[in-house]
Length: 135
Image (cartoon, rainbow, N blue to C red; front, side):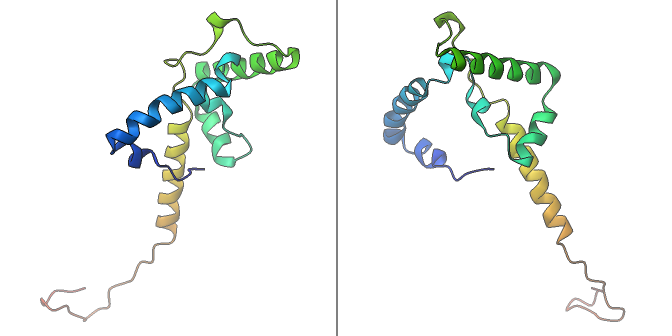
């Protein structure tokens, strides 16, 4: 699910960051999802097994709020209307609530794969290392 990111590259270069931050804010506003009351994590496709597991891990209120935002946005889309401006998602309200859980699940899976692929070798009785201790 994770995709390569240039964020660290941009953040480490102040001249590039000062140019990219206004551009990213403009892009988020132009995308239009905030005018439908959605957050950026609401746009993550649910067809992925990891995303479905992350949605199941949401607390009850966050899961309810997600479904409410999605249904309200779908209704607006059917009516070809936007929400009234006071109901738009603000920049402060557009925080990541699902991405951290997705990253956590990916780390868990990676760790599980590493552990499952680990080969354990039994020490041979009587073999010694350079220091005279058993292997």
